[in-house]
Amino acid sequence: MQLRAYQQSAVDAVYEHIRTRDDNPVAVLPTGAGKSLVLAQIASDAVQRWSGRVLILAHVKELLEQNADKVRRLCPDIDVGLYSAGLKKRDTNTPVLVAGIQSVYKRACELDPFDLIVVDEAHLIGKKGDGMYRQFLADCKVINPNVRVIGLTATPFRLDSGMICSPDHFLNHVCFDVGIKELIRDGYLCPLVSKAGVNRADFGDLRTRAGEFVTGDVEQLAGDDALVSAACAEIVELTADRRAVLIFAASVAHGRQIVETLAKNHDIECGFVTGETPADERDELLSRFRGDAPTSLLADEPLRFLCNVNVLTTGFDAPRVDCVVMLRPTMSPGLLYQCVGRGFRLHPDKRNCLVLDFGGNIERHGPIDQIKPKEKAARPDQEPPAKECEKCHALVACGYANCPECGHPFPPPDREAHDAKASEAGVLSGEVTDTDYDVQDIVYRIHRKRDADDDAPRCLRVDYMIGLDHWQSEFICIEHSGFARRKAEQWWQERCLDPCPTDADEAMGIAAAGLLAAPDSITVRSIAGQRYDRIIGCTLGEVPAIANLEDAPF
Image (cartoon, rainbow, N blue to C red; front, side, top):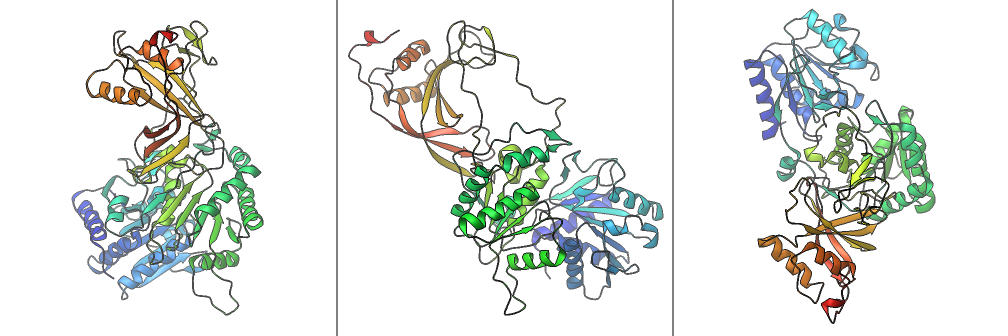
């Protein structure tokens, strides 16, 4: 087995860290990038080149089997043992031991000293408390004070504590990091694409507990019959050319709804896996979904759709997955990454992996290649008790749509639609999505940049209603100069027979008189990783005629 260039670079970076520092490194490689081969190379070198003893830790049996297999294939002369209750193996004396943390965390003294411990999915090591990893690693440190720990992960952060590396932690420094887009560019990972929906489900008002959405609230909202029906219909429509669709549900009840809806409304068989699924049934469903060769003539045909609840996030290797559907929201950027990462692996039958996000997760956490933990706020954001009128500067209660002092309209509320549509956010940074919207209403108002002086130039702000409480804005720089003014003149000439005014009040008066052509539709461009969308085109109605500017009501 030959390491890829970036895999060898990861190995070299780990060795350089161990030689030059006395703390413990972390190598960050995306899901599907071959962490098992990297740890196998490190383990084999430690045994064959430096006569050391190595322990490889993981938390699910699939990872244990993968890691043991990689070491054996890379170095068939090394004796590799397994210690896992789930796999019914209890080896203890081999030079390389692959172990499940649940099986060994109280048994460090039974395994004899190790020189090197490699932790797969190292983000699972808590930075505080007395969890299984911390308890076991502390015991190993007592047995051999010189033991070194190496972490491998795709997501070097935790929802509860941020980045996993710190001076006082078992893991101290990221020594190697390779990006998703780089590996996609070089042909080592499958490209990701997303498709836009007009609106999306609104999870913004859900309560949180211990850093995650309250399960009951999520289940109640996501489990609405109309939402499930609409979501399933869109999934079926958008995955007509997909071979393996992996769905992440919010709860067991929600998952059953999805399975039943796909069967009843679309005559589609969808497998369902939870933490309570019997092992034999789970293995059969996963085998069919992976497209493994049938073991008998009576075996069922391959499974196109598979729904799961919190079980197929790590350690599940199905290269055929060419669509990932997030039918649940999450506050955890790591969980989002792990779910989407199921589609990273290459397969001859797929050109890309489609990501459908019904939970607003990509908008919440950002494009998948730029995902990082957010700093914890001291207190949750709260709507201010009052707002200021931009025209007369009166302080007004937030409930008013128009200023009670001067009648000036406040900007439309920035709320999202409650509907069962996939998010329009791009899954990779730089992904460009152009979407056409019918314009349902339009609001004009005068805008001055926040904190600007009273004599600063003003704009005409135009808000287009393009969905249920879904608005898109643009700013026409009436009182500016240079390029901004020329753009404003061009915009005005397309909509009005009269010259572009130089005063924002005059422009507002003309707009309020209905003398600007209103668009029937607009085209909005979203670029993943950028904060604001922008209007790049429109289809205008007829330009209103005005015989005399004096007829205008201003």
